[in-house]
Image 1 (spheres, one colour):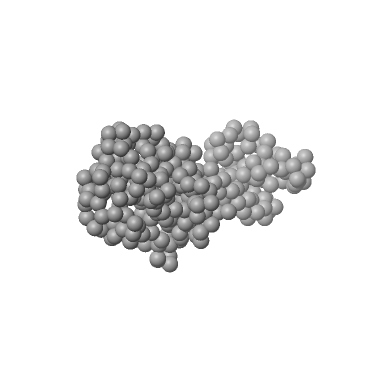
Image 2 (cartoon, rainbow, N blue to C red):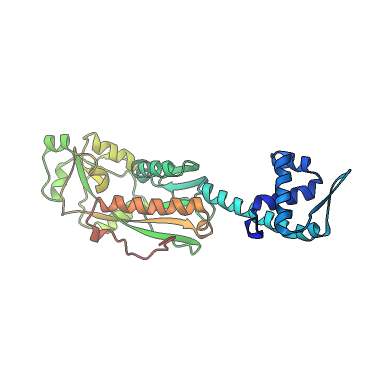
Length: 315
């Protein structure tokens, strides 16, 4: 056996014998048999060409040559331990908890299948989902990642523009069969509309972007987007719904297609300090990819806005 043939196992055995002072103690420490420990030492001595230990009634005494090799064996041990830690980290790095903040509709209607895929791929990952229309503060770590319909303004946040979610009028087939199909925006005055209860900032923004929307009294007022969606599905009336959600149900039909549509810009946001955390990086990228798929399924590819500025975490 040449010097190059010596494996790390031999050096580990050598170092353990040095530290323990006997073959039997080293065998117990390493979980090997005493004869195996002896063969490792014999092989090292044969390869190196000089003795490493002197047998005595009190155990094994290290020779000067063995003591000279000790710091190198310790370096090997430290390097091996670091390698194992890194390998273990790479294997299990996608673990821990990631808190995601999203609106009610996105959190309940859009994210669950995405999160199911994420969990199937990374079962050690724990997801906390805050499905609320309240914007949580990422700078205060109220959430790790947020799906937002407004562009972030804080400089410490990483933002990726996902695209623009199209929203338009929809109604259940039962309602359309009962009340007929409006042919113009003005015709909406003859229908039961589902809308908001209060003129919140979000509602005012919608109205500002939709000057053609007639002032029509609502048959149902609720500030909950989920409640509005449920009312549409129940056939109560006509309301605004994300095109991607409507496309999933063949009984939900578009009303006034081509005459009225809103675009809801969507951003994925994360604090810049979390971009090196593997659990957050992977979650961010999966959300970005699947949310873009959701938007692409709603509109032509040219209208998804994928090329809008953002801060990519990975190529």
